[in-house]
Length: 251
Image (cartoon, rainbow, N blue to C red):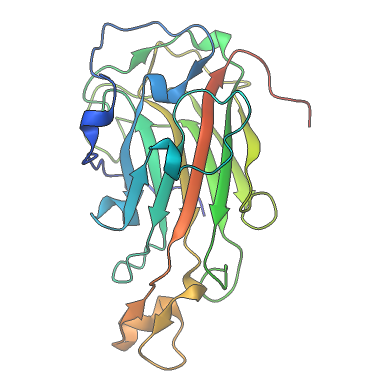
């Protein structure tokens, strides 16, 4: 699964806990920084665009424990329930600046040539069976940049010239224990500002859902007049999400 084109921004209901992220005079960023110091996880995508299906908690007691040694910035715990009525079967979140922006306002000024990678720790806990409807693995995407204000999202002025992405197979590359991942920023164009610093998206294991029509696959359920039920969520944990001036490790 690759991130779809439709991304809606969903404001956090606990925004009072966030630092002030709406002053466009900040910057430029030119040294290693934690994404949570400047960007807000307020761009909810896929099933997350509808309230109630994807939530975030950044209180440390709800994060995956123990946190990585030397972790910078906030840690996050996401709970993702699939919207059985939409047939999207994926969800995700963008960290954006300013909060809830989709390019209508300037991003954070950035000296992009200094940065070599975005690194992060992630863990995923899946309901079973942990495969997509009809069979197939689920994938987790780690994305740096990628907001295109001149594309599907509307006639806004500011976008990310940078777009870097890595795709990880759930159960093989990424699992229930923290592991560090690296999105290389090699061969990226110069950028003066950054709207979306980081995003993740993931397939929902729709084979864990049930349909009221016996024998119907989840993708077929609603078209056959059934109701799809997905009572167990996916848990996604993120920590130490950093734009780094040091290069990623050699593969």
